[in-house]
Length: 124
Image (tube, rainbow, N blue to C red):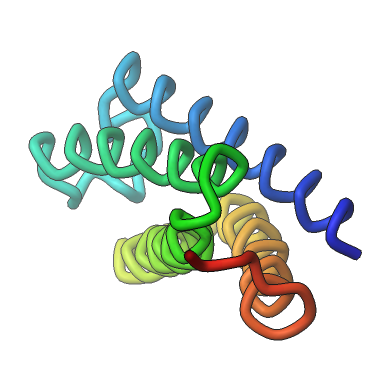
């Protein structure tokens, strides 16, 4: 199970890094329903995503950093839920993006459960 959770962590770190790069190269206008997010917040989310990607991989470097992975996963879940809420508030009739965000949130939820209950990372 630990190997599977590490694979998920690495994949989530790659996914989050790609999301951060995408946010830097595209404005919030690229997804019309997210245009309510101010540009500065959009760029800040990119920085937070890069920090989350590092936090997901940091426990591989030091046991003391084991707590960072669950925090990063919870942050990604919060971001996916934020995108869903903003999308629903926009009134857009098409909900394809919501399916994507909820799948990512569900995978993150499993990873969070795995790292807090099933196979916690060593801390210190």
